[in-house]
Length: 261
Ligand SMILES: [Ca+2]
Ligand SMILES: [Ca+2]
Image (cartoon, rainbow, N blue to C red; front, top):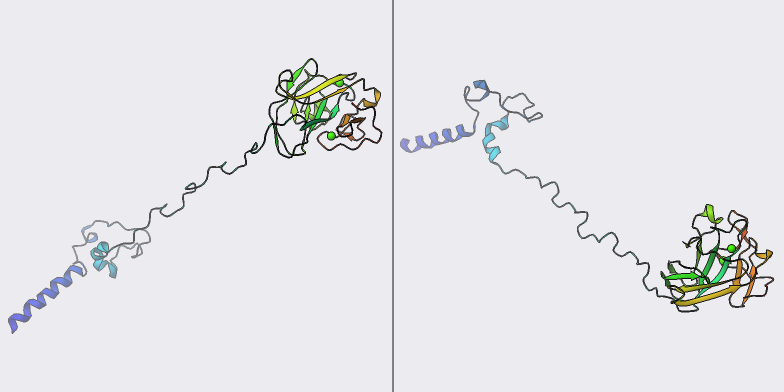
């Protein structure tokens, strides 16, 4: 019976020594070496062995929680995101070129107060029920033809074509498209055409004429009531130069229309 008990006791002692305190003289600090310690480690930075150190090799071998990569699971900002302009309305969606008679010349500042150069303008209005593409628009008198491209005109909308878009130059008119000063409107008689493409070879959308306007139109825009075929001098002041008219806005009625066009 004694021969059976002794080996089991020796086995327990050997196994306990593998995980117990290291013998004096076998630890690194006892040999003069300074073990690496983290600031704020469990031993308070003293370097003294703590109870848990007894099985440090076991702890080191224990599975540790591995933190996920910094961006694991983080959404990628542009993953699947639509392009910045996706879904943006296309300005010319559904627009078409106008037919003759669908765009009308409705008001013209032929003879601005003071000097005319740089301050004349022509207001046009859409009579169509759909948006119109006026990118190939031209205006012309008997001698000069100029391009006046307008991107779009909404149903019933208006645009102001002028010699200058600079409000300081044009007297404060909200000009949509500038055509320069090469085309000058004669105060004593003119024929003005609105066309798709150059008027000499394109489609004439509208055409108006006037004779000698006289003093009543000095500084007053020429209002053209196309339904009634009458004209009159605008009476509503606008801008900064002492002129009268409604550039870009609906025209009032003519209380005392003149001879018409
Ligand atoms: Ca003029
Ligand atoms: Ca107007």
